[in-house]
Image (cartoon, rainbow, N blue to C red; front, side, top):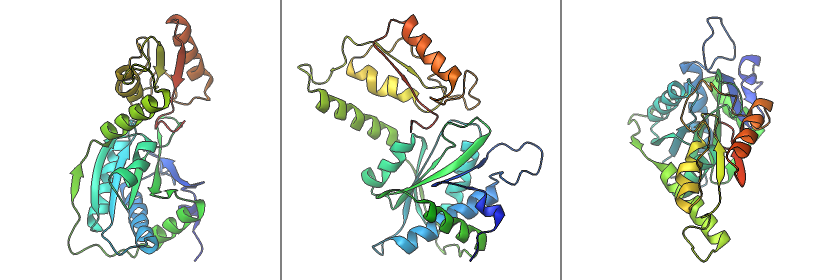
Length: 268
């Protein structure tokens, strides 16, 4: 079967990418609730086709901070429930943390609602299994399922459990650093270091408050740690000139040893 242009346009490498905020025009890349539902159901069909064990499907769902991510996450979860899937609603989450739900929660798959480093009006979906992210061919197959739209909803709907997986993920990062440094003061290996973080109002603020600070780092002077899906200070993109200027200023102004900057979903 050939993928129609309408559905093929949502494929961006190994991700789904489109527009999350309706502009008032009929944008063919708009991720409407119906479009998101069909793509999500396609992912469930793909999981069922490719799983190695005949066990119930479970999927963790997280999102970045952009203004359309809450709506899209709700559409994803609604579709999963209709398909009879056990859902873990992890809400605000980084992309690496969502991958780790396939390990820590033993989920069949996971979905992160994000458009990564793109501006506030864009959005998308990233998919994972325990083997890692999906390939471009996998995304094409999911979109073919969405295009066909021949899904049969489950007789018994799935369940949703809210789960703070970022807490577990932050703990794992702290342990990784402690083990790697193996300092005399094992639990506070960053004592005496001043590190500033620029999260660009994306998910990355947790790295300052939940990872670096508990390990002893002085994170005063960090910028834009609060969630704001309009990204009012700069696009959360480490390759953006304004973003790089921001973190450089934070390092100089605070006489920091190190500056760390993230994109929206902490993948870069």
